[in-house]
Image: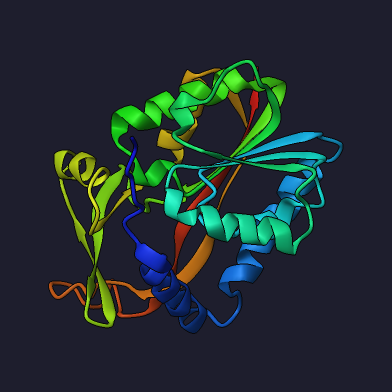
Amino acid sequence: MDMYRYQDLNNYMLDKLIDYINTSNEDKHWDEDEESIFKLFFEMTEGSYSLLDAGCGDGRLIGKYKDHFKEITVLERDKSNAKKIINLINYFNIKEKVKLQLGKIQDLEENKKFDVIICSHVLQHISITDCEDVVKKFSRIVKPKGLLFILVSHSETPRDIFTKISRNKDKIKEKEITVDEFNYLTEVCGEVPVRKFTKESIQNLAEKYDFQTLKYGVYHMINRERPFNKTNPNKMENTPRLVALDSYLIAQRL
């Protein structure tokens, strides 16, 4: 039996991050920034019939897409989220068109095909091997010309970065780690492993399994200070710069 539990119990660390973004950037807040991405997504999926939300968590996105598709499957590995998801389905009165399925993405049957797949902030928390297997599975269960909508943490550097986020009293802290430690943490409860993808990394992963990139962008911007160059202070000052925390990819199955 799969006893997996998502490491961020009750979304404590996510809520802390959202609060930080909302206080760091006066121009766009978390929800407003995300709404602009989903507006584009809905424009590109207009007329689509079926949707798979692969790794739906506690179902927080259901309210966004419930009116845009006729047939919806929400898949979640963490069984502790089932009650929250069912309560949301009942609250929105959409039991007739929404099916909850518990289990791993890799274990999905391939006889059911979807017009659209959403995978929001899942790939960043699973092992390198599982990440490959999940995207490979998507290529087998999405219809020809169907769309894949991926949201992940974004790397501002030329390489993928692997970190762990942990709780320290009422604060959260993040530390860069090795790939081996990251892979280990994906299957244990406690610290949250995070893989931050470069644009090239997430695009290459999708293209490897016969998806063609249609749209890519970054969002959830925050202000961070530039590091001060002590050897030549005139060239770089402690001025804020915008940094993207997340990125999105909309790709089509060839």
